[in-house]
Image (cartoon, rainbow over all chains, first blue to last red; front, side, top):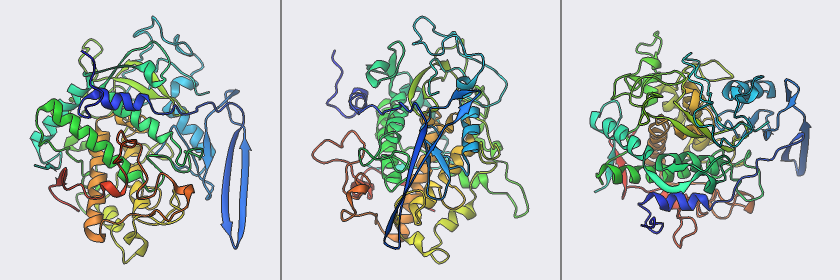
Length: 139
Length: 336
């Protein structure tokens, strides 16, 4: 039986809609760039900032933005608006520990074929950090 | 009959139905697989509940207007559409819950987090981690941990029917598969990692106090971003004590990244955010800014602009203006 993609009450309707949305561009290789603009006393101000961030010598290729008050944010942490980039990178490290692990799980960087269940870390340490992602990336 | 949304801590049936419905959606195949959503790795089935994780991530990565910066404003956050977009998302989840529960009158329950965040006495200390919401019994959400080991959404590796996270994001906010794992929560972390407290009832009252801050009588104000004065930004949490953002930060774990709908507490949290918005409209009228005279740089956030919703391409798309009055679909048992 074909899934009903015309009936909004069926899951295939929402699924088909979402599958048709444009895929976001997550390729942020190279120095991060932030553009801030302001209109003041009849003048248009543009402040372009580029910065390179490394963690353990590896570039951090994350789209980071600066607001006009100087606070920092990024796509990966929508509820955060932090006073410094140092804080933001610390939160990224804490939130995505597997991406910054010096000993990547065996599946990191692979597509996961044939690795079902091999990289899930049931730490049981109550640390509340998110572990066990099958595919890394983002750095 | 329109659904009535009730307090999850005062309505045992609404809480039990919500838990049962979430579990049913978590195991309901959509017929599509992960590759259809651009998620790398072996193609695996995508289940109905996880669609809401995908939707949230895609919307927040969608810059509006196209070609803009999703970090400035996006299709779900950091601008005026924050409240309308989440209202639509919650309504879709509620409709799917009604379907799987076989109850067209089911109302999504809300978590009045400010009550849990308020000290029991003026000089007392709040202990939101002790809230009945986090009970480890089958009618509770379980507490903190990685994985969460108690409550209805506990992880048990040996039990394939136990609650698990399948799709999340990386540090760039891109969708990714995860080897099935349990939910993670880490309550009350200090800044910058989280928030040591939940919002309080006094914080909510202050968000309605137009005498102290006349801008709160307006839904939103220029420049319509995270620096704006007005009610939307106060409730989203980029001004004032934090409100919506602060709840995500207090819960922590899977509530922190873009894939936060992975935690079922996301929806009862946002249901309360929607209730607070409804309470604001009962005071200030069903108004919304910006209107359609706003410049194209605000395309996607103006009152008649289509939302990133399944009805966006249709002849009658979901728009901010179109969802201001939801009385045909649901109401709240009490408004603040």
